[in-house]
Image 1 (tube, rainbow over the protein chains, first blue to last red):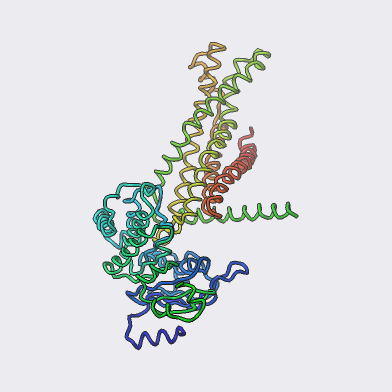
Image 2 (image 1 turned 90 degrees about the horizontal axis):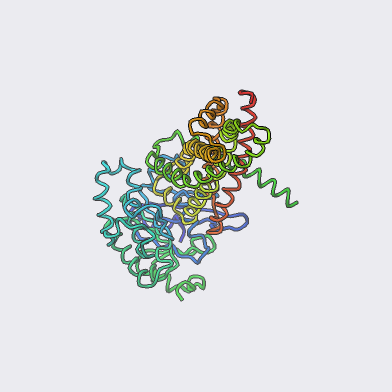
Length: 258
Length: 256
């Protein structure tokens, strides 16, 4: 299905408008082509999973999406704003609408959990009014991930799963419209991974966010996805729901579900 | 061929460091200024180096006096000891040795800290949260080293002179007031001001190189080690270049 067909079909179904739109994204490192014309549409309130094997360019794509990496060509629009045309102030403003859960949690290890969560708040006071409200917001968001008791601990004192949940709490603290998950279950044991997946579902329902989930975990994709894109050879090779893709006869697609 | 590549890489690095310095001045005037982080870094940088600087300076004072004394005694010029030691410590040995000690302690620390933040995506996390990581991490650290090194050098000079006084007191029965009266009589503004001014440049170079190496760290945990190591090597080399320029300029304006 082409991108244009996809948009038209969605519009015809009176689906919500796209909140992220990636067109013909290309990125190469020297002679190694990572993304070769990748397209993506994420609609409001949707959970979209991008699956691909290691080194297929998933993380590169998500970094291009938030402006951490500059693509060679193509366009990235978030909430109708082309990020290539934004100045730093506007880009930072737009980033407050995006929560990012990093693969390794990326908690600031010199700060306590409270300071980690207050860090983005203190820098975007205008969005939340007085900073005296910070404590309430921090407690609220920590409770939503079930870790209110860790507020004064250092990240090094937390387990991998707890760190991932705190990282999710930090991504949620600015009340973003979009959450990007980069391999949310990687490096976790199966039980903790299930807890994180469950938490992602709960967060999506509670905060009404649109989610873009990058993973190679089939269980995670099955539970959280409403729609999936398979990133193979630098392009969106196949697209559809989990069940549709699982029944595909294409060898490359089938390889993911073995 | 290999040497040519190494020379080219060296000049590329100098160019990148210059760009990094330019970005520092650009970000310095941008709001918001992270004042709390700056104070925290001043405390970290000063506190972490104080003991090392103090011990190093004390030993320098002792050693210089012990080694110079026999020669001065030979000429019956022991009374010149406070003047000689004070001028050599305040003008050159104090700033350079303390800056080198500071570079070993702080440049490597900053390089490793920012390097590990880079490889664990903490810097990316800051950027994605709409915060300027350069402003928060680099500007505050470079300013902290720039302002803390001169203070450490002044304290270190004092400790070195006290070490020198102890040797003079034990070997030559010189009193504390007499020793330090001679020290202050010997020192001129032409000795103190250029020596203090150059320590600001030393501090700036140490902070800048430490941040530069850490901020641009890659290759995982191996890269963190390399960043810490090369931060010390590069900043130490830069210190001697700055010292040469400072002495050269001082020679023109103050006629040593």
